[in-house]
Length: 535
Picture 1 (spheres, one colour):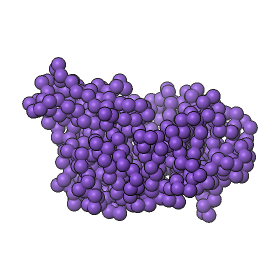
Picture 2: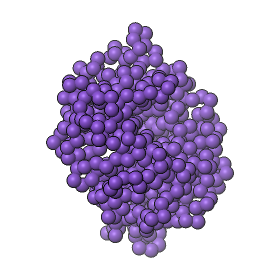
Picture 3: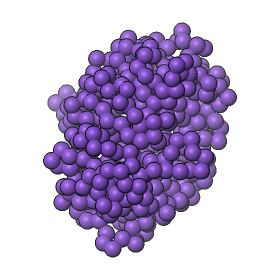
Picture 4: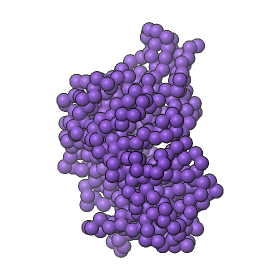
């Protein structure tokens, strides 16, 4: 569920210490060099080595400064340059070539074809396609299907036909056929997954969607086609898509003009029309299982969907008090946590689930917060002074035994029920469900000089400055890497599938997969390399 890297990425001050060990670069030996750690599309960290006279400074080609940078354009090469006095060194990464879905990995090879593996039933097998994807530029994956966008704007899908693998049905609104897109696909420019479908933006600004949407609270696992939720007015509004969010039973589309279009089951926020007048100038959308929250450019928040605590309605209707001055919104399964511009935190949701809506026990400590992280059931707030405050899921989210160690923290990663905090000195502190990585005692002696933490829903993987990897958590879902440990050498990035797979990529392009075979834990023999550094 989470990735954590060392550096100034969490809003804490970048103190100039070497990522991984907290020491200075002064007095190093050898020629100045830099290595980048992290996944394209996530947070990347530059680690300088060698002799440096003075404090090192890092400049990224995307304009970012400091040891760590958000990778906002993973489809382009990215360079980090470290400078020390009159000496500098650079490293450039290739564009993103690893894509993942809940149980599938897809690797874009240098010839623009794909290597795909994982759950064969849910998109991990392309062998039955009449023609393999080629000239691929991007890959999107949902819960049960995958889709490749090719350079000519066409899409190839595979996996469950009714979950977006096929769009062969006749286009048009109101169809019960999940393979029928609501409008024709043109030359597609961008593609987003929903839970069991896809949204595509054509190069002329028009858009379409296909697949199915789960019927919320249907004990029989029922679903309806995406097309069945559209009428003429909703279809006319489906255009100029900027981003797509989804939850269990609905989809929220943020448009380039800052307005919002929602479709799907009203019990999950599929109808935003009662709040349409407020849904303007939206900057981003966050989702819980049954709600959406739109963060507007003025720092206000608009929530729609099911209201478990509603006094007059079962749905949020805009009359509820909402926080103002919000800079970011984090979510778990049921609760929104809003980080305010003044460093305080407000929550939106029902305390009934014990998933963090009630901040009472920690309210006095939720000040000076830099960033909020979430598992599926709890939250952890990283304060600007490097301390951590955690709340929610009182049965499992107990950090009292390690609270004295939760200082000088750089960043945090999470599985579905546990947290791991990466400290400035490269050590790691864990808490939460023991079977989901909350107990790292068996490997704690190896958790030194860590530069990055990665996680799936069940296990953690720590990447060390020497390129080795330490894992813990559910053994069969990636927590036990002993069978491949000898090959985990010179690693620079670790990708994951939520359902239990890990894929580590080395600086020289070698790679190692482990974890659940049905979630990508066993890579195909025909894949030669996964380039990371641009030569």
